[in-house]
Length: 112
Image (cartoon, rainbow, N blue to C red; front, top):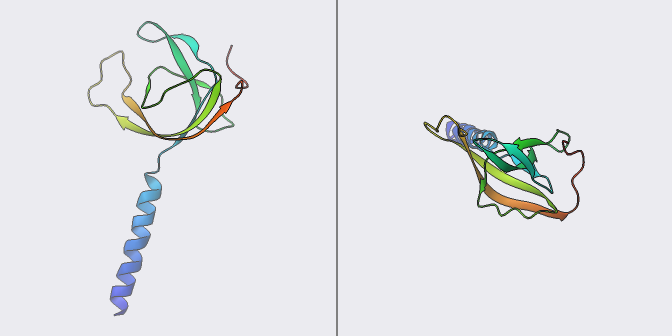
């Protein structure tokens, strides 16, 4: 009986650790887009994974996300690797899992 309890505990701990390692990251999206050049001139989202980081350009869309200027968003996203992407494209696909917040505001510390 002790072996069954021990094995059950080990399985539960393993399952919890596995789920924790596969959590989807948060992504903050700034209240305005900026001009950028990827495969050609385009508008890029400004994003960051942590509130205390600098904004970075996101050259791709987030599938399922409808951006509205003037709002700062906190999202949960899923990143998927793309097998054999074109040379001028990202190897990562961004997919919206959940919109945690949408706040009307001007984002701070945006790049010039």
